[in-house]
Length: 298
Image (cartoon, rainbow, N blue to C red; front, side, top):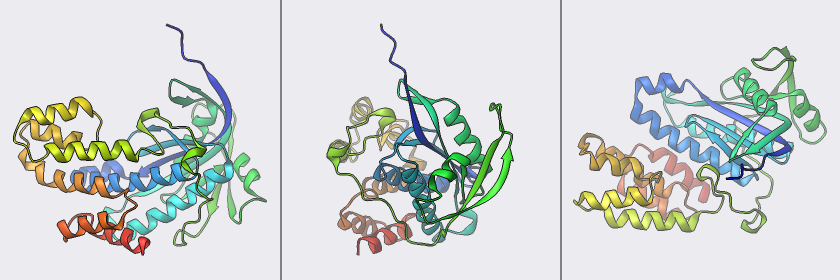
């Protein structure tokens, strides 16, 4: 079999990671996973809206590339501002803060993965950012200097792992409480569908099919119904819940039901879907986030 072609290109790379994720998981796994699910939805949606492509994810971390440095930076700021709002409704001990690093450089794409020094530097720069902050390399700062209304604080040169030369790092100075501003979104015809790692910018039809399928089996007492769902959607939105029911894990069924219900409505453009969640779970785990989404619709 012929090996997949290797594509080399210049791109803006955004690397992000949630600070304190392991600590929060140790304190309360269920609550942390619920918060992470909601926050990842916010992050992933903004990346797609700003013409970004998600290449790698480990749950609490994200790796994405953008054809434009300006878009990558606009997305990073919007992400931090959106998460600041989401965190404001949580107890301080439950908040999840994201570190973001941006680099522009030569990368290689193969088999649905992106790698190279350009990626490695973005990841190392991200580790230097403060929780809730953004750090960029000198190339990014120079590119943005006359294109965006922002300031940068020079953090000096840093020696980072697996990179032979020192990297000049700058901290972005922005207002985390400001209203997120994004470039005009593309229409669905502007981008080819992308199936890398399950990231599809316009997957509403497939999502609706899966939700309809799940609704037809979730009230069933037959194990075969859940097995059929898992066979068709092994990485589906309700896969963990289906496995739990197959295994008879009744202790996590009810929280899983609410989480699954929230997963079906959180990305909806229809405020009635959000209101349906609030009607069903007036004191639910995601009540405050649902109310925020309703306010945005209004």
